[in-house]
Image (cartoon, rainbow, N blue to C red; front, side):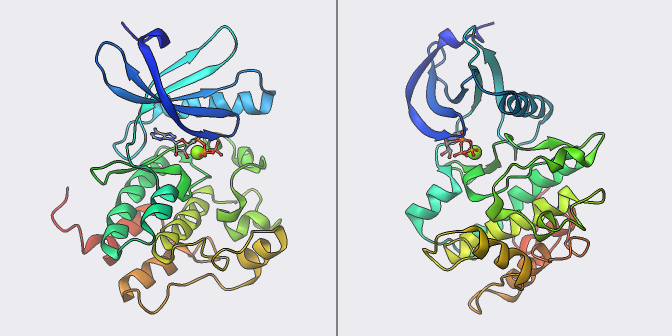
Length: 277
Ligand code: ATP
Ligand code: MG
């Protein structure tokens, strides 16, 4: 009934992204707080296609581990707005900046939720393609959800979709840079797991794991770190379970990488969540 933009009052800007701004908004009648992502409609066809792809994915998903989308609005101006669930603790990268590193127990709890989300997406044949700390949102209840489907693709018919060059390169898996493997048998699901592994590792070490702290990412260094060097591993201070978990995610050979469903039963996740259903 009252699903119109006029019912919403903008409170503040939460952040800026590619071609869009995210506002905190309040529903005037119910006082409920939401996040509203407004994307400029006057963009080129690639961006527009990306937006509609995001819409379609959000419409299809229904998981407690994926950011809920309550409505999509198109203004005559061409602007497109997404009314989303508001996450009051922000993204994990801002959380990392304010808290420094996280404990293994917190990381295990976060990893569990993100894996549940990834397991759900992958079972729906959706590849996210942009898993990174900035795209994982948290709230005060320590709930963590996957956001930002701007570059994800529905792999329903053809894997060719995955060839379009988008996403955050730093978190991209080795096979995406290899013309021999980045072909018809390219496994987008496994690529999500690589990005997930780097993200989880970052929560422990406090910086992007493929570079030294504070090091500026340039192409040569990044490509060398991703494709030529051994995958990064956790410092000795981490438990054996955690070290093993990370190495299951960061296998350079994508066929050796564990799936989301397999990782959910890894001891690092399972030992802390015995009685959950
Ligand atoms: P990109 O466009 O490349 O994805 P981005 O992730 O920074 O970049 P957005 O996804 O548009 O861009 O989000 C911008 C910022 O707004 C996020 O980093 C986050 O801090 C904040 N934000 C986004 N969605 C929400 C939400 N549902 N609740 C709270 N904050 C949010
Ligand atoms: Mg984003």
